[in-house]
Image (cartoon, rainbow, N blue to C red):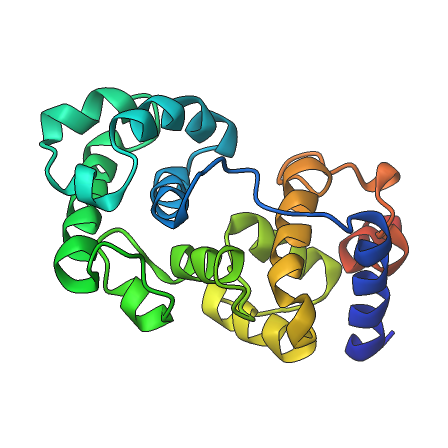
Length: 212
């Protein structure tokens, strides 16, 4: 199967079987999504969703968080991974959003990546979820699933991102990000992937290699 046909078949399956895929992070505004994604780095969405209600109740927007101290914020996020650095990132991000962007999270990718704690993946998540930008954020799930399905052999997240965006139609890019994440989170897991329960196995390069 050539790559064009592989993409077409896989995207068609996702469209039919996961039509309403979206982020599992809970948020009430764009800044809260940005903060949640920062907290989710090397941490589960489930854990992030456990800590953000109290955090967002106390600090609902960039303006309120920009005035907080480390000791104000840390107790709310201490149960996530790397809480010290993430506390600093949240405060510094809020300060930059207030001082440079008037308290509103920007939609431009370069502007987003100028915010402390925001790398390419985080910027792409916010841009696609909130601003419907035709970009695909590549985290560990997307990277793994893309390789296993034979969608990309890119050696870096950015290389995988470029190849996915080359082959995934513009209107499908935002949801394709969620398709791949959720498939990696619940089916194509890093350890013990559920290949026998996977509707994509007939097109999956990893499964075909295991079967030979």
